[in-house]
Length: 121
Image (cartoon, rainbow, N blue to C red; front, side):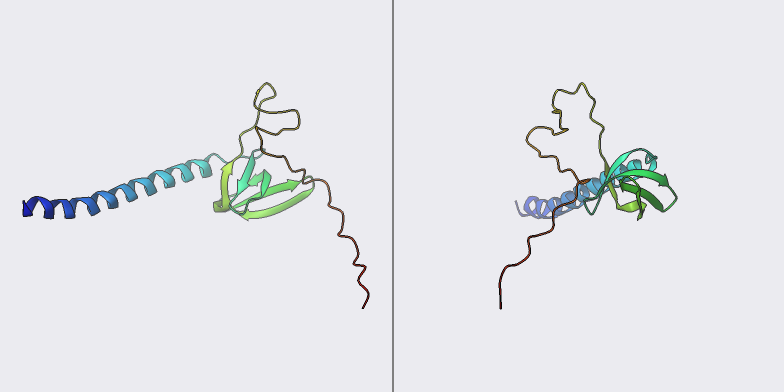
């Protein structure tokens, strides 16, 4: 009885460690595949949450265009994912581009400045 319980105490941590390594390897393969398929014209999301279009792809640097005429350089490893292009016939996309209940934020419009303070001292 004692030998089977000691075997179990040894096997469970080993199994958990193996599962962690397999999961990490799978994530690394997915990341490597994303990096190898980056090309100009794709809409991407960075690890900082910036949505932008890829303009140029180098070995270690990618040039992104978050707004027309605005170009910024990012480390290629900072690209978290490629945003899938919604087809015009996709029934889940509304006419504003929103999918489901997710709101669409128009980043091309400038926000009005906050109103001036009327506090007198």
